[in-house]
Image (cartoon, rainbow, N blue to C red; front, side, top):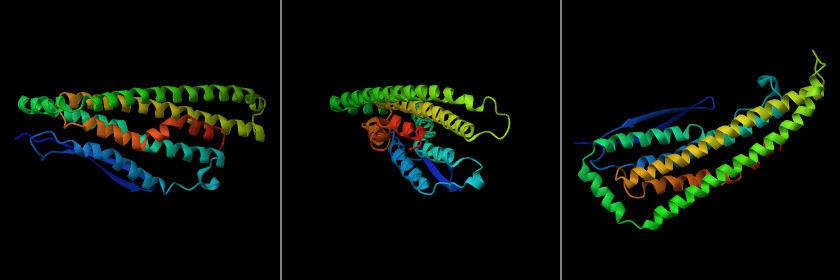
Length: 251
């Protein structure tokens, strides 16, 4: 008898670091049951939020970096951690579903397709419309961030001269320049990762919708996943460029 899979993620925290152990486990029912994957997303966010209640302390003597840089890194972490690796976990779950669907009996798939065919079309229309809107938000926020980074890079270029003739014991202006340059670099990398991950998750939700339409999941599977994204991540995404800019400006 064919059994479907659950995607289970266990979190272990040691010294404020996250260890994620992912594994698949069979032994459920003959029809596709993927509700566990849907529950994965809010569970992930709640666990990460608990972890972030206990951030690493900022001590100048211990870290060896400036308080401004340490503060920027801590704030970047708060934005990046909830999405770090999340799409990879979702994709792994979807791939397992797709593999299982390829060997499940056609009668079961056709039964699921018929159920979906009888579902209100408006739900899928709303889903597609909201995904498209989210793609626009990602593109818009990313572009705003790129504009701010480009502007800040011009200002940094003007400050670079403070270090040109200094070989040892750099001046305070030179030290400030080096710190600001490192903050700029970390923000550039972090924002690029953030928006790439956001775009990738939207593609994953579309893939989930395709699997649902193909009878591989229960009706409403992709919409429940998307609802979790809307609840936990979209509010931050819509204001993300300003959050990054605030870090860039030292706010």
